[in-house]
Amino acid sequence: MLNNNDIKQISQLLDTKISPIEKELKQHGGLLKQHGKLLKSLKKDQDIMLDMLDKEQMQQRKKLQRLEEHVGLNPSI
Image (cartoon, rainbow, N blue to C red):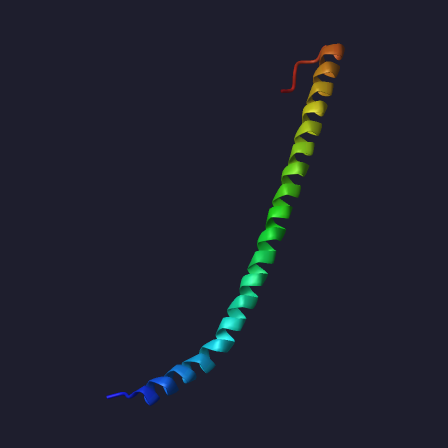
C-alpha cells in the first residue's frame, strides 16, 4: 500500500512532467488567439471588398443597360 511519502513523490514527479506541457499549451493557446483575431480581421476586409465589388458590378450593369437602350440593342441580361 502507498504511504504519504510515496504519494508526495508521485505528485512531484507528475508536476515535473506536466509543467513543460502546460507551458507549451499556454503558448499554443496564445497563438490560436492571435490567429483568431487575424482571421476575423481578414473576414472583415473580405466583406468590405466584396461589398465594393458588388456595388461596382451593379454600376457597370446599369451603364451597360443604358448603352444598350441608347443604341437599341437587345438586353444582354
